Amino acid sequence: MEEEKIKRVVRDGYAKVAKGERLNFIPVSQCCGSNVDLAHDISRAVGYKEEELAAVPAGANLGLGCGNPTALASLKEGETVLDLGSGAGFDCFLAANAVGANGHVIGVDMTPEMIEKARANARKGGYNNVDFRLGELEHLPAADSSVDVIISNCVINLTPDKAAVFMEAFRVLKPGGRFSVSDMVLLRELPPAIRDSAAAYVSCLSGAIMKDAYLATIKTAGFENVRIVEEFSFPLDCMANDPTAQAIGNTVNLTPDELRDLSDSVVSIKVAGKKP
Image (cartoon, rainbow, N blue to C red):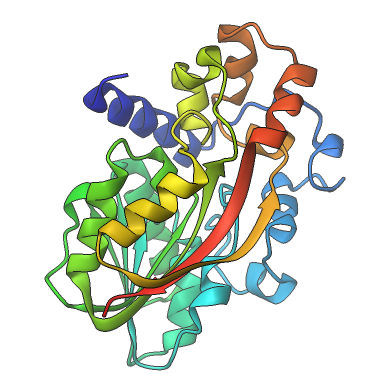
């Protein structure tokens, strides 16, 4: 798909999520737990603690992550944190709690509906140290060398130019600054029907690249000490938590069983590194 079409498809898909639209092609009981709160179940499954889930405004956690980047970032009082693809603000609010009133958290998202929802959540929770900005990750609305820590949760895979994202991350980080991201990568190439599917792109599948290529992209941007801190299989059942997941099976004529077979191709990784 062309870059602008990818961005439009992703923006439209997550605008629907922000508005509360959600389609699931399998029962909740088959995905990451049996509770009716699917977002809560998924977040626990990918590494969030109960106290973290309870510490953010209601509606901030949409269950769209594939890891817990704040757990790896070792955030300190007074730091400035930038969240790439901040959604409704879940990780931003956790980061804000960690850096305190003297710290600052910036959330960047390209979907206006998500920014609006995140700002409403910030007002509801009384977060005065969080700033949500509309923008693309390939062109971050942040100054050079202005950020101590960058986090991101299952979003970079959605961007068509991942090299530009990591180059921008390098630009805005202070010397010695660090990053901690959770994302989806491939262990083997996807079938063409999935790779070319717009629905699969929004569902964090067809935008993912091979693991080695992902790590090479980070290193090429200039980061050092790049390492995978954790890696685990992320069942495709759990990717049903967005408005286009059902469309994957329909548009490429795959059954739920065939979709689940693809889980061997996709893993969630937590990656860390720093700017020299």
